[in-house]
Image: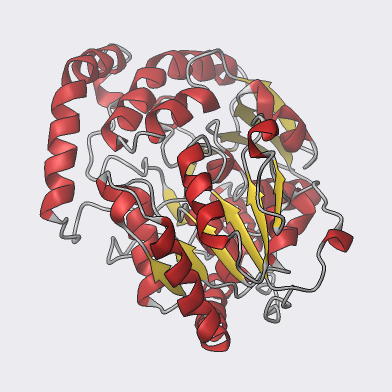
Length: 415
């Protein structure tokens, strides 16, 4: 049995892909501890792992506040600002009880520093694409990032100084800055979906295991009509005007529309929603996707992977540039329709949403087949079982036999 510590971040889009890896390592008999914010304690403990709460340095609400405006530079400043206090806490906590291996999220720069300081094998998990070496950015994206970088540059400098005070030799001086670096980087996607990147990344595909999700939905509420599922995810769900456009676009469409308003949302504002809409704070996404015909999504990579896993085509409405590149990858594989105006600060009108849904519905079988083809690439890397194999190999113990990738899943049922 080995002692394995995960340094996570307060975002379901980062934690959910790692939960199956944690659960698998626990099943194999390892002592696993996960550091994260208190709201994630229950889902972490449900895997059998121990939980340690970070001090207040960066919350899910903080991440939502910067991401809802699409400002990735402000998001980076938030990560860097949190790095110094989280490094101090993690180092103090782990110094007297060093793990056999440290597993850190790709944005946990403090984890990279802790791994170097403690000199323990460090594995990075990246639930997002890595850029910076061979990618050619669009001019508009470069301009936007330069403007946003200039705006946050003063606090960035102060954040960097605070980090440097912990030890200049610990600084994450590499490009791209994210994902963080360790002895091994596990890309939680497939090479086929990822833009050209470093060759020393280990592409293990999607790490999806329904056993790590506890939510359920009464499927009797589905009446046999086609199902359209709408979700803006767990961080940027507060864009109510987007929901209004969806209702205008699909209020008379011959389908049931399941709209996820976001946890903590005031559902009373949807009192006059169209009769074909079912609106909840959230839905169990893995369960719902198995009964979905079309998924309207901003194209966070976690949601894109889950949609492709079940062969569900997407209408993708990215809200910032990271999501735009996820959507471009899926659209290039023919798995959906990309509407990119909102990533550039505009708005996708209701009429355009309607046309995109109708485009997919008119050739649904072909879109499903292409989505399943991309989903197969996500299975081929071995997923959470292969991730656990590679982590075990890092701790110097006997590596468990390679467990086969999960079997192919049939196309989602219609309705």
